[in-house]
Amino acid sequence: MVLVSGRWDVNASLDILLLKVTIAPIFVGIVSLAALRYGQRFAGWLVALPANTGTILFILTLTEGAAFASSAALGALLGIISVSAFTIGYARSAVRFRWPICLGLAIAAFVASTLLLSHAPEIVAVDLFGAVLAVAVVLVVLPKRGKSVPPTTSPKWEIPLRMLTAAILVVVVTTVAANLGSQLSGLLSPIPVFTITLVVFTHSEQGPAPVFVFLEGLQYGLFSFAAFCAMVAVLLEPYGLAVAFGAGLAAFLGVYGLLRIVTRQFPARRVKDSGFAA
Image (cartoon, rainbow, N blue to C red; front, side, top):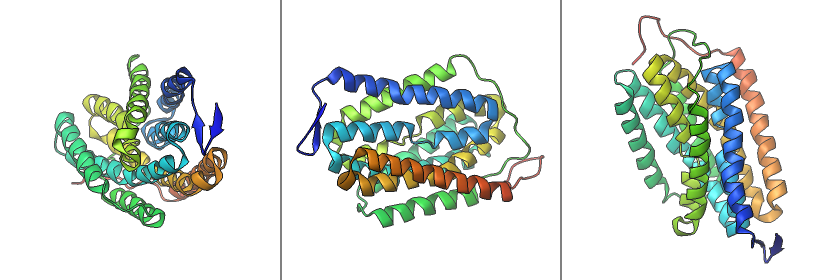
């Protein structure tokens, strides 16, 4: 691959296809195995890692150019608001309903948010503020667990399913990106496919308590995800892939470390073991 007129000339389409179907699934498999050992809250933090979005932005840079991918990174930043809409839609309904209703309401919230945000202005400061505000608001109103939720086992098919879903998502979004446009491609990149897999199985088997723990961890992780997206959006076009992604990952890890310190000082609130707060 060589750089031609600011865009990568990719003649080896097989190489790009291999990137699409290997990077994110392998990463997701590793994250899932780690999550099984350390529990739902840690799993929530890990799901916020920019595995799929980072892979999609990387491929879009190679195939569509840095300007397109930079705009997509801003879309992904706004997509945090849609993920937060999914989170609160599922969590609040899980207080009263079983998982099929919760999932339907959460997906409806995600879709509605995405459609509204597809017309939002592409301004880094504004989009970053909106994303951070949405995450913070959801953390305030999110139902809290009633008791400690220990790590649990999962069926053997679950991790392969997550990996397959990751591959499908990356292939679909990057393949149709030219038709979707840069902003909508970015908005769809953080679509919560792994979250859906985890919360549905957990909710159906263990009830809502561990789901609240997982979603709380996810929301905290989205602060770090926002830092990654903002850095890539700002630096990708003027400085290129290496600088933008390096700075994005550094920002992600920095915010992640800071939040881990803060959350240890202020442990999650719990409701009474007899029930959950509405």
